[in-house]
Image 1 (cartoon, rainbow, N blue to C red):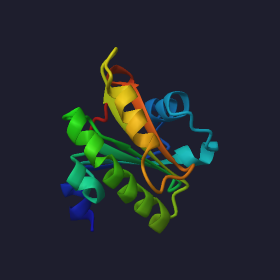
Image 2 (cartoon, rainbow, N blue to C red):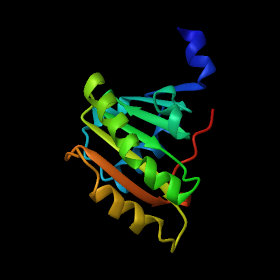
Image 3 (spheres, helix red, strand yellow):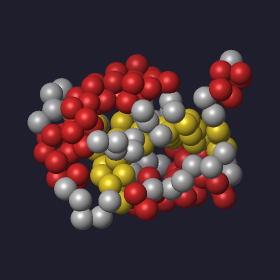
Length: 148
């Protein structure tokens, strides 16, 4: 099991204030998370998570087994908007199967791009959404880097 985690470039941040504080700040301030503090005591970051491999993700963040965040850098707006339904269907399945409260997709964008508007319109038209699925288009410079 440990070898599998090493191959996926797995990092755990257990009560490491210096390393997990930027993630906590990002999730609270930029994503609007109001989770209790205990959720932030166990933060797992996985680069290229296998569960989302079909979508070429950068990394996922598991916060206390309650919040699942997927960071997916856009390659091509048209391709990404076509994949949005599948990404959220996959996220919803994982959220439900593993007992997460919420799934949040984060797409880094450049300032003054139309990406935010296009993706938001597409997101609003997706099927089978609920109030525990969220799309966040955020200035790429505001998303914390995850260093091994």
